[in-house]
Image (cartoon, rainbow, N blue to C red; front, side, top):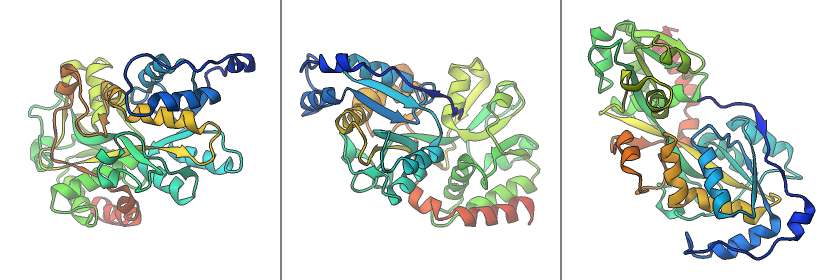
Length: 359
């Protein structure tokens, strides 16, 4: 998923420029009721600090661009430090918060809420989200998802698998690669997807670990990786990689694999992993933070995520025909309840080691 620890900050406006602000607001209709009034308050702050939104991930660069076009009086600064590190950073600066918003895998959002680092805020479209994709008071809410998929190199595979059952066939001997559930988030999420496909669910993970055990026993697992093998997939070293859909779409449409890459959401079941954002408690620019969060959850913001190969969290987000064709409807995808999923971590570790490694 290529999260980088690179830190970048856009320039902060000098004080003279801040003092010279006017009550200017954009022309035209509002994206939501109260947008112009919120923008007027945000202008008094002039800045929004957005933690963990690296521009090359999930198309944040396009959201930055369009936010700036619509709200030219607000500067955005950001860093890209990773989900767990974001929570650590919020905790270290609790007494003098530096961030206005924080983005992370939803399990980290749950952690931030438990530690009282984030504030309740319900943005536009909040009520449209599934209940498991948000904290009831808005301390975090999902803005996009990553779906488990089979990423297939058609040059190495004769028949493209369309179900978890397909991967057990002898023709896929020494063909399947996936990430270790004990040490990676993707590995844990795909285990839940395998569970759903085999009669289990988020409360019953054993059918998923048993399935992975059968995959190993059949000799169909080429290897289990500890870090993302995206470069190996691009080089043609992996026949079938169980990973997130966006990895395959990026390989196919952005990084040169073209028709050699096939992205399949298994027809029997998949899981949508939620990525969430929060308003930071006592952040320095609360109105600018709210303006940014509302933009992210608006139709304009949500559709930009889809252009970056991740699925918008808000149901019914209108997409351009070419973008929609890359991510067709997939009703078999189940929204992952990260609160329950996080409670199963130790169980996954134990059951997977028994089933896959025999220990």
